[in-house]
Image (cartoon, rainbow over all chains, first blue to last red):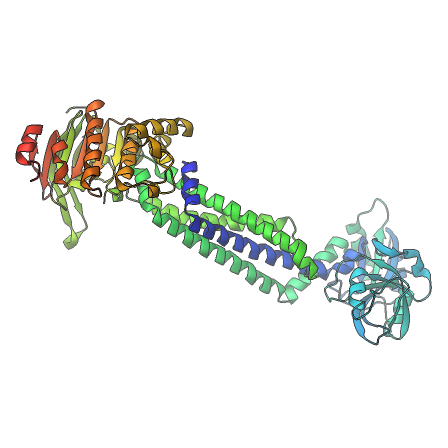
Length: 378
Length: 241
């Protein structure tokens, strides 16, 4: 009976294409919306992705990693004195302006790393050497910075080129790969002391203290010990990441905007598929009635409808997922659009498509169950 | 009662409620035996198709007894009736009701598939029966590529493929021209006499009355006359009348 059902479905090409298109479009909208949301959320904690350390210590009022409430430099020694802390180093993070030789200015995210250890330095150096950061007035620029700061130049900016930050020279000694920041500015890495010189002068300059637990101790335990003993906010990497994400979820319109796209995608899919499937069942009512008259049970007819709906859902979902993956991997990446398709997204959208398919099948099933086979004699 | 035929006793059926209620069958009795082509004839709206639907178990009667092949259909549940139909009844409809996206062979194989036979076996049997109805060259044709007469022959093949003891036909010739109608009736008569089947034809197409062995005439929901021999039928309905 399943084979007959599928032949009936494939034979009505117009409806079949319409059904698959509905599911494809719904999948595309839902997956794209969710991937954009995850992409944007991953941008919010990109500093943490670029500077990977086990424990982040910040001012008690800090809720997310882009919040800058500077601490006193002496707070580092207070953190170091907490039992179980293996090491603790300063980190500066702030928004600055890079002034190029042609006089144009571009916004950058300036990151100052510990002078001695360079803990949190970029791990993926494309050109140049990390060690050269110890030379005077030197910085490491990320690949997005190369693109941004090269606008209008005859050749791309690179190792050995110079620009200014706050009227001070910044010589590029290396180009690295980094995760894009939420604010849109490229990352410029330098040492903590040099970053403090580049940045506009304030009474307190220490953005974060990066720390690690001693071997055998958990990050969670040591982070809570730091918070308890110093009165500072102290997070493990995971805690700070989720705190940052949740801050943006609660305090921006991003979830509502993306949620609207996802809901519209679901509704469009359900409406197109439900209506088309119902119309398909309606047009085939006489044939279903004839099958019933010939002895097919309601269960078998329902099975036929479920098979048809599931197949349409499977093909539509696969096509939609393929299209959005292609877009994500090619078009969106070219345009520097945030796009992150975590494995949970296809699973969630798959369940949503299943719901659409079940709704569509149910509409048909209700009609088929109520079907009077005697209509074939009318 | 004869366990091999159709026996309907005192069947009532009405549609609608209150003032809109229409009584279609009134204490109707009907009998058909195997090995004969029985016709149920009468003017439009007299209740022929309703009686056929009740005999087929696709419509519930309000009262009375319906015995088909010794089984009381009115006492069976819906699933049991469906199973009974799949094994014992073949159907030929006025509008053919072939599935347009299936080939002739696939359409014919449907009753066997419903009974749970494999596709290969069902299609092989379908080809044999299509050959019997003279459509061996059309096994892979879609219904839209065939004439009305050919489509009805496919429908006959579909009704015969699972070798049911009873074939129920609803106005099988009313959508066909005279020549095709005669061809279809010849096949149905052959199906009735060759395998000792019961073929019940509901019709008001008097061009086909000459094929009947047994005829029940209906009017206003009742059988008012039963003609039990071919000669008697020809006497009451002479060809060309």
